[in-house]
Length: 297
Image (cartoon, helix red, strand yellow):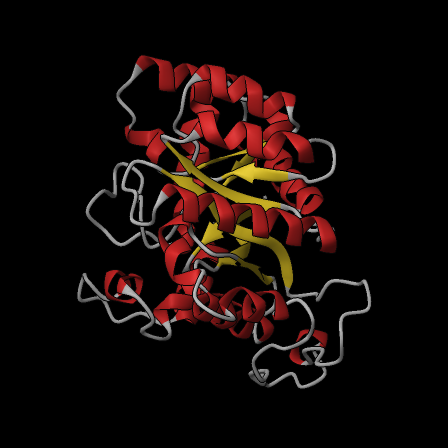
């Protein structure tokens, strides 16, 4: 059985760029990225995507993924960071991550591993093997850490970037679907993607499915109290479902209070298989296939 953590922030365990680093180290447990990856593999979580949320964080995700097998990077500017991203040359520098202007590779023992050699020549139409998506990006009107206008501008920039490079997207949308759908609609049929950590209404679920988007489900599903949420998680079509952790956040029941790791994908998968009346093996196979298809892995 193989499971796929399609959204985590494991790379931020290795370098202090934001409070995410502090979260990884908040429980007093001495862990390395290799510890987390090994623990995940022991329960069948064999692949993961490290998701960037800023320019520097995306650079670190690329560097981290380049040194490890079965680890890929998604580069993005989170809506919380939109105002910062509109500073001079910031978006140009972010776009350059897809043209070969990326960090030096971290060498593995296996020097012949193809992911050890990051391309540093100009982009030629074939996306880098390590970068499989644009995101985490979108709109967040729940916190509004950046003005709505800035969030919209940066989202539109990343949509154009994904379209230009034929990359799928990982969307963060919170309390903002009324603005998100009109922005996304012109790209319907042109850009594929996933609604990361979906917790919204059945109406927005149906719209997402009509647009061909995947639905990312994590530990929130195990502690959601709303009956409507349970219905949503039960009725997401199997061919549209992805599993994720958002590690180090959103640890599933019964491990609430612990730092989330990629291994907990299996806990969420077990919960969903019971909720949906599907075997764990069937759910794992379907969601892994979905991930491989969406991210062209």
